[in-house]
Amino acid sequence: MARRNDHSREELKTMIINSSWKIVSKHGLEGLTARRIAQDIGYAPGTIYNLFNSMEDLYLSLNAKTLDLLYDVLNDSTCNDPQKKPLQNMKIMAKHYMDFAQEYRPYWLMLFNLEITEDRIDTTWYSEKIDRLFSPLETLLSPYFSPKQTKKREMAARVLWASIHGLCFLQETGKIALVSKQNNTLDIADYLIDTFIKGLSK
Amino acid sequence: MARRNDHSREELKTMIINSSWKIVSKHGLEGLTARRIAQDIGYAPGTIYNLFNSMEDLYLSLNAKTLDLLYDVLNDSTCNDPQKKPLQNMKIMAKHYMDFAQEYRPYWLMLFNLEITEDRIDTTWYSEKIDRLFSPLETLLSPYFSPKQTKKREMAARVLWASIHGLCFLQETGKIALVSKQNNTLDIADYLIDTFIKGLSK
DNA sequence: ACATTTTTCTGAACGTTGTTCAATATTTTA
DNA sequence: TAAAATATTGAACAACGTTCAGAAAAATGT
Image (cartoon, rainbow over all chains, first blue to last red; front, side, top):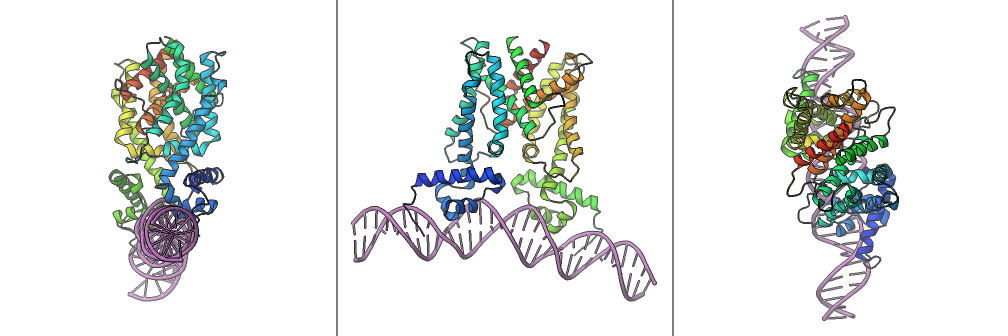
């Protein structure tokens, strides 16, 4: 029952992505199969391969959606408030990141499971989506650097970001018991930020 | 062709683990299949399930081996040298970790891909293998804390360790371009350690 | 020594999966 | 209205983890 103009190419693509998103929400990443998507959108499995080269390719699109969501979270005004001190904003931003990791757990984990090995496909847009995640933290760090030290500030932002991510990741995946009875994950993120910033201020 | 006493239960188990290790070396994690292991050790696929509940269970044993190797690396005398300053030892330790991640890449990645959801199986030994990884770093941090601040020192070790891991992970998996032309990964690890320790020294 | 029980191992079979592609249905073009 | 172009199908393929009745070997009992 081919029906070429039921949906345009782009419509179909977003249908597949939205359906996938829904399926991951309900059944987790392991529940996301080509056949299930096909059934959900009312097409045959083969149709998906008309719009995506592979399931990995589809995962990339899902990751793009996740990165966009994360971008919005990190750019939220509550953690980029000029009224607050930079340190305070940073701590709130870290909390936002950790909350995001928890709320969107399977999507967030996908970001780090995907091996980007599709050489031919252009993935610069993907790298850019990742790169821009650092900009808000970089802005918050500007008081600690002279305007000329752009490279240093850039590096500091990435290092601090990666560190917070490391905390979040090891905690969230249960790899190490970071928190004891007294401290929760948020406390240790604050501790990291405090210590790092103190070190920056020399 | 059953041949019960060709190898003891324990022998078979190590045979399977060693074979798996070899296969991952040659063909990556995605090349590790029950059938390939079986062929390699000269048994039928079903035999594997006599010794491991599932492939996930086998992965756990591989991770144990990886954690043991990593433990040795972090406890190496070159990064726990009383003659050197703690800061210097830490930087060497971080380098060791990053080198390990590179050299044993697939095994190292497995550590973080595995979801530990096997409730019934006793995995406390696994947690303990992870926990003891922190002890050398904790020792190096002791000059920065009074002997009574054991909890604080413990936390500092875990936070710093998780941070270094975050750097290593995001760099190694190519998720973010941490390094620019001037800096390599090692430099930014040094930068993190310097800044963190400076912050500790207040 | 032989018969019986117990243990070990097999390998075909099941239900999945991602992926392909000749065939078919529909739309567009001539 | 016929021909060409395009979209869609769904059966088929290879490979996966996993199971389990049955076969083979060892252990035990007599």
